Length: 150
Image (cartoon, rainbow, N blue to C red):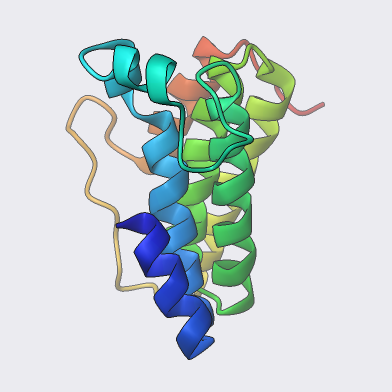
């Protein structure tokens, strides 16, 4: 379905369509299902995209999430940019690249701050244990052993 969506985006030349499809493709490559029941399927059959395999799927996730983030940044959809950056951070952590994860988490915070500036009435509702989005990102940064800015 993602490949079909990308074909529709190409046909209509709709950039937000591409942004949505790239976002979903990136999240697909991050899926935990590759560790479970679907792992054998992808080992035996591979992915539709020939350059993708189980070992590089997080790199592919980052590639597609960054494509999506670029379009959403151009259209000032900073709430989505914040979420994309967060997921890019998770993908970098899965690759063991914590410095890049830390940069992605910082970008998520910056995009959230810009979204709050532009849309002050829109608030992210966080689970009570985090309280604020900033606290949630700090938890992610602590897990990734991010250094505090000097």
